[in-house]
Image 1 (cartoon, rainbow, N blue to C red):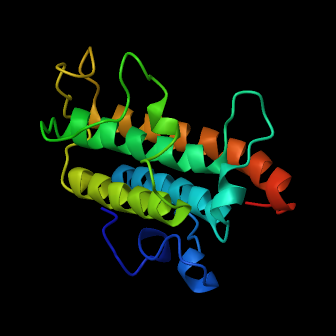
Image 2 (tube, helix red, strand yellow):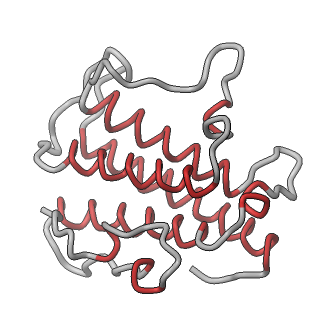
Length: 185
């Protein structure tokens, strides 16, 4: 099980010093739980690396008609983490979400009055909450069908989150290059 907080990927995200933003490559050979959790943490750290050092204005910049920005990607991934791990896997009742029938894309904006640092901090906190939910979860356990029809396994949720986060990291690569020319992982 991947629980070490000494791993730079799992603490200190969003800080502007290089040591805190270091990512650790996932293991080349490990048990399933360690591998899946490490790959998800690697993708989370990649997203935060793309967000590193941006001003609010830079984070909100969008060169595409959809309005997608780095700000929006981080805000959206925060709610995706909350949905899949806290609402679906943990089946918690106390969680809230910004979207509604009238505003289905509210999760792409983040909270009113927030700075980009606030949005990044919220993502970090939600990822930590997700790690706690998964720490002892049986990968074969089925989620409640109350929120996610058909009862996903915890394994399937983790694999979906690797896919979702990695896909948005690809978007972040392009957006960050458009913002300030930064390229790379």
